[in-house]
Length: 246
Image (tube, rainbow, N blue to C red):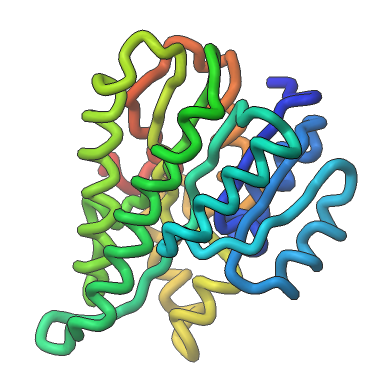
């Protein structure tokens, strides 16, 4: 799973799972490009990644931003070998409290944004290109208040299954990586004062007795993006400690 001199784009790569994935590729020698909405976070992430890392401020829900992103990559790198479509948002809103504004924002980012990220990247990808779309176990077990977020991740599954037929013969593979709960600051922020209590409960559901660590998702992304998975296409890999299997 060597990525020396490979051009890897990780959307939403300035923090959390996205940063861990970007870091995994950087450690394998890739030229990593990360995106995010906050320039200060991007600058800090690039300094931590070191090497050949760079950043382009991008909101994937904005078509103009995506056009500028791919124009920049084409001019500087000329190609994309691996796309990690990770950028996404979520918010806890139980039925009865779901607002139209949040519904639209989550679907626009997670579904529309991912769709046009993948579509925009494809012209820059050649034979042996790999796309890894980051899903979530929330697509099959969303839990209370996560119906909208889970629905967007279920939509990504349907999109990937169709896309591999649309691009049949291109040599580009598209797979879905669906993490379970991972101990990141963003998860703890969402859970608030009850964070540790909820994490303990989620750990009990896992057949490994714990929730995931961000670097483990990075390793799974390396596998799906590499030639080690050259005959894997249209698959969904659940990286959740076995919780979705029981």
